[in-house]
Each structure stands twice: as C-alpha cells, then as structure tokens.
Length: 317
Image (cartoon, rainbow, N blue to C red; front, side):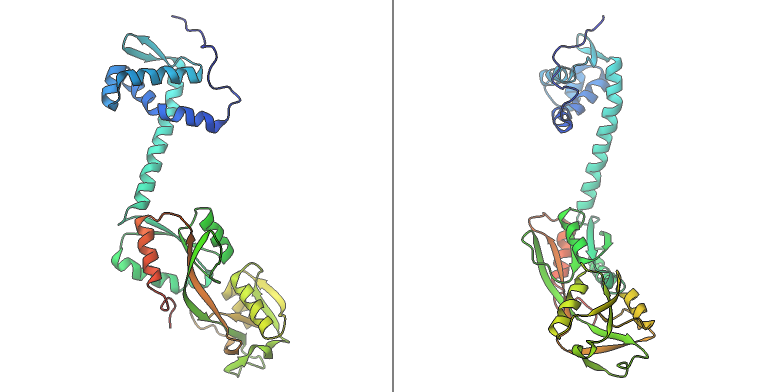
C-alpha cells in the first residue's frame, strides 16, 4: 500500500521548538512501546493503559508529525521507514531522560546524595576541609561538588541553581536570598618583614595611610571591606596591585610591594609580619547563604543544619 502524506499537519516546520516538545513528549514512551511489541493490544497491556487510549495517542502522534509511523494490519503494526528513523531518536531521548532521572534521584538520596557547596578561596585550605570532615562523621557517603570563588560569583551561582549553599563574606542582604551570620574573622595588617612597622604587634590603621596597598580586585568582598575600613580610618588606600587570591597578595607583600589587610593564613608565611589592627575594629563576617524558596534535598538540608549549628565556632580559634 502506498501512503500519501497526511494533510494539514499540526506541527509546521517553523513551529516553536518548545511547543513541539510539549506536544510530542507525552507520547514518545507510548510510541516506543508499540514499536517494540508491534502489537497495540500487547503494548497496552505492558504499559497498563487502555488500548483505545494508546491507539488514539499513536494516531494523534502521526497527525502531529504529518507522517505515517506505522503500517497497520489489524492490531498488528510494523514501522514504516519514517517510523524506524523516529524510533532511533526516540529511544536515545528516552534513555537520556532515564539517565537524568536516575542522576537527580541519586543526588537527592539522603545517604549518598550530593551538595553543591561554594566558599571563598581563603576558606579552602583549612576551614572547609575541616567542616566536611566533621560532617561526614555522621554522613560518610554524602558527596560534595565544591566551588571556590569570590562572593558575588557564588551568589550568582545560587541564583542560577548551580550551588545549594555558599560560605561568603560580607553576609549578603538581598530579597531573593536567605543568609545567616556564622562567625567573624579578624583581619590583620600584613607588612613586609623589613618594613618600618614590622616590629610592632599592634597598629591603628590610620598609621598606614601613606602606604601602598595590595588588594583584591573590585567586586571581591574583602576589597569592599578593605575600602570601608580605610575610609573609617580617615583615608582612601593607594592601591599599587590588585589580585584574585589572598595568598598571592601575601606574596606581593613579602616582595616589598605594599601592605594588605588580610585574614590569618592557614600556615605562617615567611617574609611578612602580621599586625593586629586596634582601630577601627577590623573583622569580616562570614555567613552561609542560599536561595529563598529553593527546596532542599535531604543531604543539603542536613549540611545546612550542620553549618547553622556551627554559629560562633565555624573558624579555627
């Protein structure tokens, strides 16, 4: 039998792709089942749907595509060449959907799920490894996707759904985010070991007003804190170098290229002296943030509860 193309197909070649997917997606598994069994009644039994529903779905699918997918002989069917071509892509698409479903179910598993966790570079050497180690005492198989970045980039990661939680500073204040203060970290004025101030243990920040500063780039939380503290001390810092990572700045200080306001290092750094700032109060707040209204999977909820329980005890003494 020669089949003529169906008239007035429901999908035009210029139709919107999302509309096409929304129209076809519910019928693809039914199509694959009929194609596999080559028998509408048997396929209906296997998929536990009424035969009449399945038959109508296949007719509607062909109408939507404007192509015959099956040659019919009573309740027995066989694929047309177009049907075989379509089946190849449908099976691939269904397999990908199944793989994606298994992946998201695995990520949400209470025992073995995944937490996408962002944190500042300065917390990567000691703080975050210690937190995860402590958390895994009670949740030994929970997996982590770890992202180190500066604060604004992590907040965008939350908004984009790429992160579940992040440790950041300053603690953000935005209507679409929830943030909780966890701890604070003292900042020190770091000077070269041979600097005129290196023998001092304490210093007022105003005493460094004439120094060249090395700082993080604009947009980094620590840069905003540095600018604010210098402003409070009565001066605008003269910035000689800008970088992206605190330990790089320490290296620049050790090379005699300026001074910097930095959190304590994970390990002592030769070539620098670290001075306690007595005025103004030089600290940065550390907080945890997440997207408002974003549902937590069980492993994310468990890690969030763990972090919130660390208020005041997040950072090493």
